[in-house]
Image: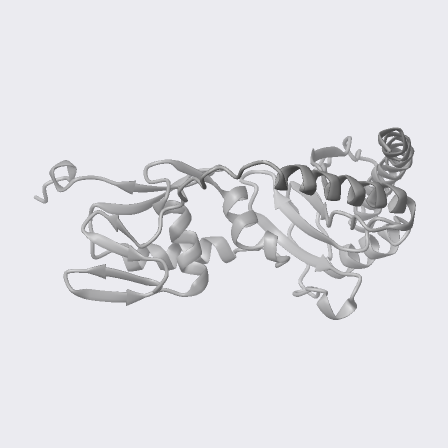
Length: 283
């Protein structure tokens, strides 16, 4: 059984290596055509970087401009040749601060495509194109043997585990209930901020963002983590939404001068909680 799993795994790995190598060639072709569309036939497309398991980044030697509609059409046409690229998210990033200049999502189900602002030509600037692919599903024809073997192993493991005396469950370490924030109280379940007997209602997304900050006060939270945990895990494209929700939360935290959400340039945000003694005395 184990030999069978190992053989199938190596066979799959060989095919995946070829598919990923072919994907990088397609990504370079996308960069090449984008430069041609902007009138640049001389400058280079820099080496494609694989920055995560299913995320790639295309960089360019010089600044350029692009038409969103052409970018969408080019990526769809070329990535249609990639059998593993049915669902993906494209973000065009500004080189200076990694902010999203334009983005869209393409799905195998065309009704789930998210494409906007295709008629607005973007200014000449230094851009990087980030393309994140949805991981392929585990149930495919080529790994049917592997799945069957794993099912048998899972059944044997279940029988072995069932014969062992269960250990006492560990208490849940995840904080629940009301979380104190300075002179405020944050009730994540009720989606409320409370101070001096008054309460402020929070939206579902504001609650999720604030909960991440509240569990790690005075610690820097990276933008990428916030984007992944709040939006990308749900398959929703992220543009300027994060900055908008941070701005809304700042306004709702204003009643307590000891709390503020500080921006860490180019990295992320930090929920700073200080005591009243440390606040500057007004003139």
